[in-house]
Structures are given as structure tokens and as C-alpha cells.
Image (cartoon, rainbow, N blue to C red; front, side, top):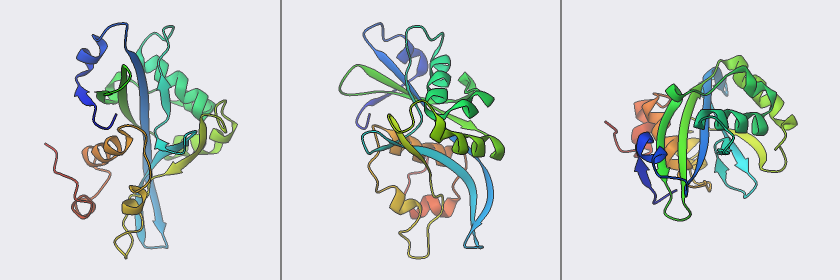
Length: 195
């Protein structure tokens, strides 16, 4: 969706039957760990390596039989992450944004869900047994929310990967809006201030 236009949810839902809707979720949990015994991790944020070699968030297309965007998203999470995803539910309150792509008639809806550390650990442990593991999803990855001493390692290097659609922009917006990055990291990455 890079280059796509941002839509309000009501506008996106009113586009009509010629449009397909995809929903994806950033899942995160507090993390008290220390890298090398001194770099605070603060939060664990999950993304996944997709079948096409790009990074994205778990989720996918909502089917006609899904009762709502959130029903479709939760079905997709169970397919891609396994049964541990049944221990929580992404709700409308977790909604963040919608983007219409410039190409095929697809609207991508983005959500962010805070989990407990135990829920996140269960998702990571169970994902290799999920229906779509090894097919649509090649594996989960944690986003490094720190910058190493060289100023490159950690999040700056992670952001150099290839992301699907608007996933990179969605990640940066969510990290800033949810307060998952400290102000020093935001300035170091030259992320524009959001109001």
C-alpha cells in the first residue's frame, strides 16, 4: 500500500462490493529483558516473514462468510499463528488505520493488540504448528526496538528489510503512537512528529 491513500474506517467500509478487505495486526507485549545485560528491550513486537520474502504483520483477507473485519482477522490469526491466538481477540477498539492501495481494489485495515507476556510467548511457541506455517508464513520475528552502539544495528538495520505494502509505515506509526519507542529513538530514526 505504499503510495496508497489513507481512509477513515467508515469510508473504507462504504467502498462497495468491488473492493476486497485485508486485516493485519501488530501484536506486542511488555518485555523486561535486557540485551547483553544492559540494553532494555521494553516491548516485544511481532512481525512475520511472508511467503514472498517480505516482512509483514499476521492477518489476511476477510472472507464473505466472516461476520466482521475483526472476525476475519481473528480467523486469519488462528490460521497463521495457531491455537494460542484463540486466547485473545482483536477487537474494533484495537483498530488503527485503513489504506486503499493504488493497484488492485484492496483496502488494508491495521490493528494493534497488546498481549500479556505469557500470551505472546504462547503465540511464538505455537506458531510453528499453525496451519499456514511453512506456506504463507515462513516464521515470526521480533522487531528490535533499540539502536546499538554503532548507530546502525537494531531497529535502523531492521527497517532496511523489504516490507509488504504499508507495513513499514504502519510499524513506525504504531511504535510512536503507542509509546513503544523512547523519544531518543524517534529522533535518531528521523521519524516525523505525529499529532
